[in-house]
Length: 177
Image (cartoon, rainbow, N blue to C red):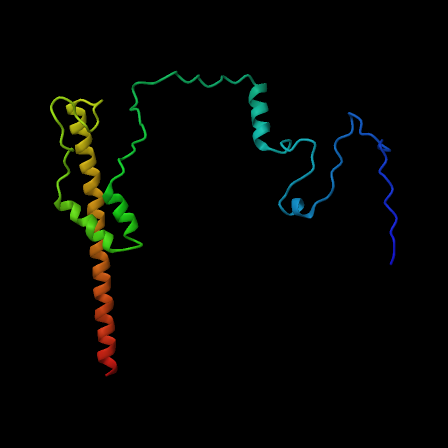
């Protein structure tokens, strides 16, 4: 059995210290060389963008005007999040289980109604006014119909493709017989 000696401890003080005038010591890395990385003191010295910017500052070129706080002449765009509906889920999960598209297409036949409420206190969205609730129902119905039509189209395309495959298979079997 061979016993190895413990390694000598590293020196506490480096033999040479880097001064402020010396830059960091860089080692050659073939990966960096392959991707075009260079060890310059500043990576942007060769950038043409830095040159043009410094030239423009030297010539005292008139600066662009500042942006206005808010321009009301242009239309304001906001993110529109459509409501999540049952037909949307049926369409998406129909790719895993196509009979869901049948249920999604049946939504076209059913009316979307507000849950029954009493005149004194509505149960569904009590913080909204009657007009706001009707607007939400209308918006939900529009989105529900859009996804239900997608379910119907997906179902029809699937049935047409299945029918074409069946006719093709039948034609192949008849031809071989």
